[in-house]
Image (cartoon, rainbow, N blue to C red; front, side):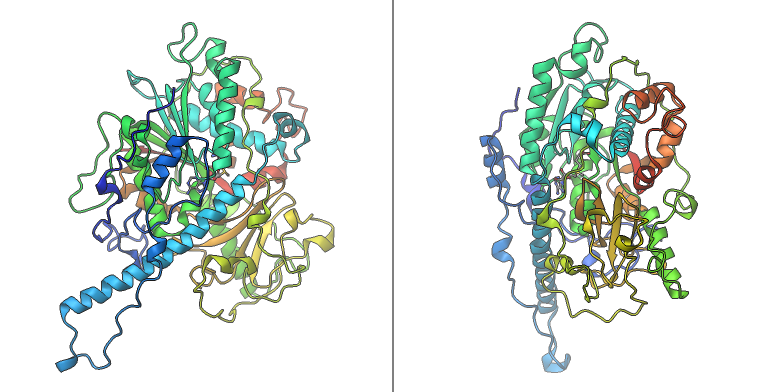
Length: 594
Ligand SMILES: C[S@@+](CC[C@H](N)C(=O)[O-])C[C@H]1O[C@@H](n2cnc3c(N)ncnc32)[C@H](O)[C@@H]1O
């Protein structure tokens, strides 16, 4: 069942430093990052990235692979200072071209080293957070959870993406192959096992070792019970009992390390040259490669830096065959931009959102946030999944993790006088002295005093941050960004698109730092990797549009999003408006590989 591991076959052209290259689009368009600096030259997506945090797996193959893949970046983290500029260049003091070039290389080396140590910390925090999440039972999620409507909706939206975009036009002879680049505890296994085309192969990767162990356990349990859909007589071939989905799981940093480290990925096919570059002919693999790459609720962690974002896309593009699909869900930057702009501009006008009414809540998912979304290039592929009549909600378990103290930002009794997110400093040891805030630094609304809103997850109140949300979720932005010392953009435009950090918390669930993924920058970057947009919709819109479909509507009923009884919930909708507001923070996407 499991792939044979063959030691270190990592192609040298993947891990070796690539020459610094200019990004294709930077000079031209407003669509991409326009304020280019030396830092924005194409970095090697994987070089200088520290390995994932130390972890132990019960699989020798994982150990072997990781030790080979490890890079000695820590040993180089203290690189020499850049060559000092001579005071009077010219004449005898002129720096030769070679010296200038050496100085430039040293500067870049130092920047990359700093970045490597920072991202290692980020990766460690993410892994720690998700490793600390306990496995909660299915029953708890279905009955006791305060956000069961939201959980159901999130799971249904993920199923909807899978149903709409995972069925290939021409079924591959050797079966569908799926790569889940942040599979967590394997919560989507059941969705794949019930997909219209059940994958022959599912490869799940995640940076959190404990999650991977839980995913392995869940897969074994599903197999023991009869292999998901296969046991019900549907799936591949449509007759009798199809072979069960073969699944393999790996502890892997899928943004900072090349996926070609994983033997089964190489066996399926991985193009180490995917992405921009002067000598690279863009184009997907005609044979080999995965049919679908999935990244659910995880892509935003890669936008900590350009290096990681490119590393993530290089892995996506490298793993996909030509015509393959890249599907996922993540926070919607249009919602974030519109809200940040609204709150900061309201302050500029003398309003103090939240400090009197106590509410920072905004109308997510409607108004200008959604209005700003571009027209969807919608795929009209119509899933023909037969309704199997089996209750499926129990198999769908988006379980976005319990808060972990490890990443909860420090709370100073809610009385902090700091001027930015206090817990953020650990991400950037070289952060310069904090600038004095230039904008009206009101406290966020004290939700605990007005009675109208519960304070979710005890989010601390910072004068140096803006915050919004409702009783189940909260988003908090430091006014001055910890990684970059940049102030929040009053126009809501996050430029350059990397490193915009905020803190997200969701009742019973997430409590962790995340990064904005500015949509247009991301879309343009994805194009550099041969990924063309096929579909993008906010969660509210996905629900409104896709639940109209007969099969997906029936699935929504089976998964507890809607009731057949229209007198139940809100006209049959079992998702409370507060949950829908929280859901509207996200959008769904599908790209295809050219
Ligand atoms: C909110 S969970 C989503 C899990 C799963 N996709 C789902 O929808 O239930 C985010 C996942 O991203 C994973 N993750 C974050 N950074 C990662 C990285 N660099 N490489 C691999 N996985 C990562 C986390 O460990 C976590 O399991």
